[in-house]
Amino acid sequence: MLIKRPDDIRSSEITDEAAYLDRRRFLGTAAAAGATLLASAAVPGLLAACDTSAEEARPAGTQEDELTPYDDVTSYNNFYEFGTGKDDPVRQAHTLRTRPWTVVVEGEVHRPQTFDVDDLRRRFPAEERVYRLRCVEAWSMVIPWLGFPLKDLLSAVEPTSQAKYVAFTTLYDPQQMPGQRRSVLPWPYVEGLRLDEAMHPLALLAVGLYGKELPNQNGAPMRLVVPWKYGFKSIKSIVRIRLTREQPPTTWNVSAPHEYGFYANVNPAVDHPRWSQKRERRLGDLFKRPTLPFNGYGEQVAQLYAGMDLARYF
Ligand SMILES: Nc1nc2c(c(=O)[nH]1)N[C@H]1C(S)=C(S)[C@@H](COP(=O)(O)O)O[C@H]1N2
Ligand SMILES: [Mo]
Picture 1 (cartoon, helix red, strand yellow):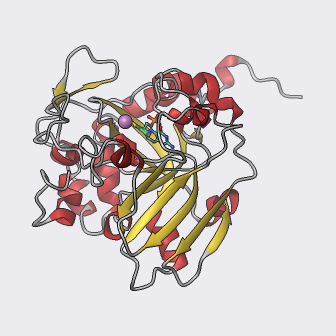
Picture 2 (cartoon, rainbow, N blue to C red):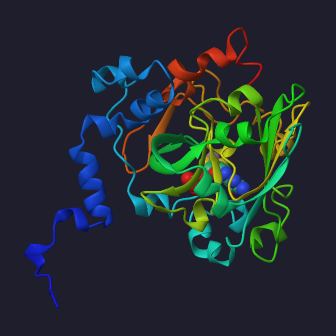
């Protein structure tokens, strides 16, 4: 039998967070600008323009985007189904059973289907996407997600010509989700996108982060990530996706319509009624930094909103 001495173990076999972070740091500006680079890689035609210079790919005026440590990403969460405190989800979300798990995709589609989440993962292999996440509460993180483009799933069910919006629903089960026993929000949590937003290559269905399974507190087994919108659009633990003709209701808009709109694009020019959105605190930083329009993804997504008054459609 061969027994490995420590100096026989190649660094590539060490897969803890520190090594992961070191590797990412070593990748340097490529990882730092990863959000932009990877995003661009998903947009045909933009890759060539961006892979020559990570410096140019980074949105003007931003500091380097270092990954937020795994422990922070997985212990400072908003997931009101498990309580309203930032550390409630990490303490409580173990009661969520994520297998078996099915996702119904229905409505204005030619091929409505119920998918087992593991079948989905085999059918749409996960890729890594480093995205900034900007919460409407004015804090932000940088997260290396694993997931697949939402558009791949939507294309598979073949939207009809009547489909204009996509509605998402989180699991409703007060047994597994103790926060749902209190009416802090109308349950289940629901969200929505316009179909063209949902078909944008940056819109991701995430099934993991930091190269691992998605922790329950981050929305296992599958959650939406829409990096140019405030975090509340990125609905967790999805059980239903319905294509619709009309704009669907969304949880935060229903509970406080003057504070949270349907679009919720990150916008430093439109303040929340109770606080400024001009700046944000990146988790771990002492000082705030400027908030970027569309969270820094304007080059990729601004054309979705051409001609719209973003102060009115906030
Ligand atoms: N079902 C559900 N999805 C949700 C939430 C929630 O309370 N319930 N919170 C949202 C908010 S406000 C944010 S900022 C992000 C946080 O994601 P994270 O905890 O993975 O960072 O999840 C969003 N998705
Ligand atoms: Mo949020």
